[in-house]
Image (tube, helix red, strand yellow):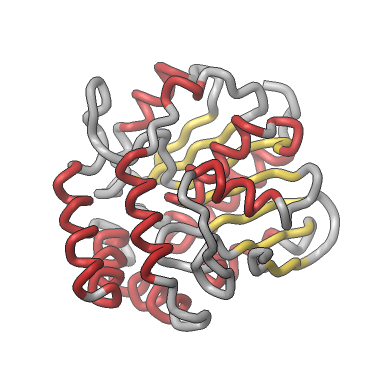
Length: 258
């Protein structure tokens, strides 16, 4: 069964992938503004929004499911877990990815050796435990963490809740699998193989993917374009939409070679 997708606009193809527990409605006005001059493809990740969930257990399988409904070649833009999926696609099928844009993304979501600017493993484990008891309350807690520290925390939290309600609830099995991916995926060793231009945007006040991770990233991928957005938390494209879009537009209009 194919994933649910929606297309807006015409022109250069942009694939947008949302984060854990969310759906493609989260892009809202961002997608509409990008679609003014380009073709935007919004994909619901497996088991999220209108997409079915079959047996996609690995990050590669999630990426393959997205590739099955994506254009042959496009710019891939991912947020949080969606950024990891997009990164996996770029590593596995580089000919399909013209450029890669990561919003609050990271090759490793939890702390590890030489990777301290990340979420504590026990914190993510607590989410997994509470998810089995009440997935809706766990989602609400995760949403609150995403906006913590942002200049527009209350407004953005309200927006996230409204967008989440615009699609069917994510399937509990897909949520469990997504948390497992966030806990176990580590793409650091593969990162240096990226050849296409990459843009990495971080929220200066992000508590899930700390902006300090940018320094660790640049040590592995020195040619990457990296920016920290002041006053933003985990969803800079919502809280600081104009600044985020300006950085994306500049990157899209730049050289195709890195």
